[in-house]
Length: 193
Image (cartoon, rainbow, N blue to C red; front, side, top):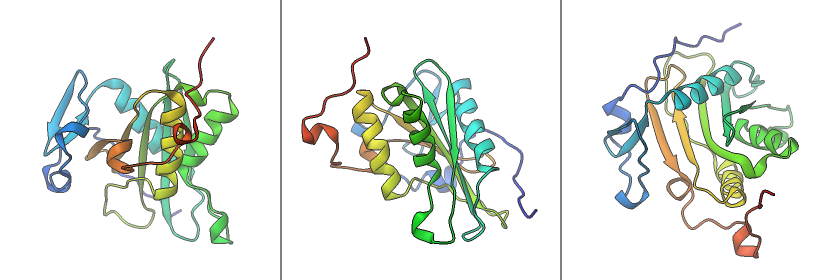
């Protein structure tokens, strides 16, 4: 009750909000089928759309009775499979779990942490039709950095509005410049046998 999500229109460029995010040229990531919109890369491929749709589906299961702010995350693995997570709040606020961390912990529980290939995050107020582009919190950025370093490959994080009207693709250096991680402790990426 009270949850209303707008129908999806994935990866359509929206110059208004996205144009304010000016990413340095050396941090931009390009891939086949991408459109550039005000410095942000907008993925229009079916894999990106499926990942964002999975994050939106997970958002619908968020347990957020205190903040009324639902977040869903989806992690695509190297074999194309997708693992999801949603935020899980607790009456003792400090024990709440973010969607991105839930999804990545689930990936790790499956023994697939080194297989992380991309992440999507969708979030918004449960009682409002206003949409904002949500990016991961600082803690989640650090957890994503751990995943990137252990996977040994750059990750793209697709941040989308619940309707999918706006999508911003970011890299970890965009989200967490000068990050501290496993490599700073001499821990190398996991090697697959």
